[in-house]
Image (cartoon, rainbow, N blue to C red; front, side, top):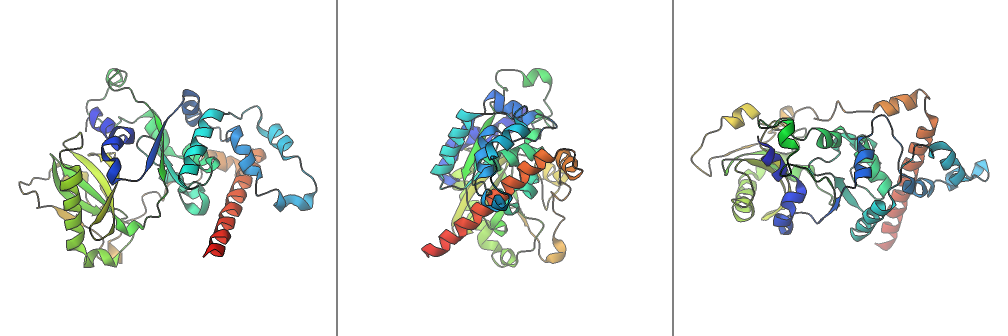
Length: 345
């Protein structure tokens, strides 16, 4: 795996070429102050523009306590540590509105999947900017993107990273939210421009329909690869993820480097590196054939960050109050949306 392969898999690099076959996406350059905020260690305070979102929807919950000056409370708790990015946050809110009030967030490569425990209903769906900042700020995957994206590259050194050609332009990637059945996701491995392997993406669950539809799933992915991906992506070896929503309907999700930084799922990187074939249709499709074939959840060891361990001991009650307000506000808003949706049916 080379530095150029990692750069090619950055979503801002490939999206313009594959826009028509993937999910609607908006890309916002990441300002230096926001970048610094995500890199700050040991601080878990949301930006000032999140204050109103944390108050909205929770004031009624506390009306039994009498009149409370929420602005004063927030200011006294976090004014010395709280950052603000008004222009950037306004752009994010504009995209959120364009996407109908629901979006998915990530940076150039990684989404905050390891922080899903902190999301509303344990989901990566964002319905306000507070949820976006919360997920990205809590993610080790995002921190990896910002600090060591070329860690596994054989040609990496500090000199190559600092060249103009390899300089990373970090971006916030916002994608229109799409409810995806994980049983419809597949990871495809391309080596030397040939599709050599396909794996069930969610290797923690047995899906009966995959075995029943194996032949048509393979054919649809082959057709999609030949028509939309082959000889168009800027690498000879790479990995791409798709969802097959129905027969003859495949949607591109993402590209990943062909190497150990990418999860090989039901394969191993040793066998993928050694894979040899001269037949473009001679690839292997692996999936769980019964419940005994599933693997442990890859993010099971990601849990509460040190900040929240501190919260549990009462070291920083102000942060705990902010976090609970945000979660309550988000839950109330989510419940209200469900009620509105029910009334309209």
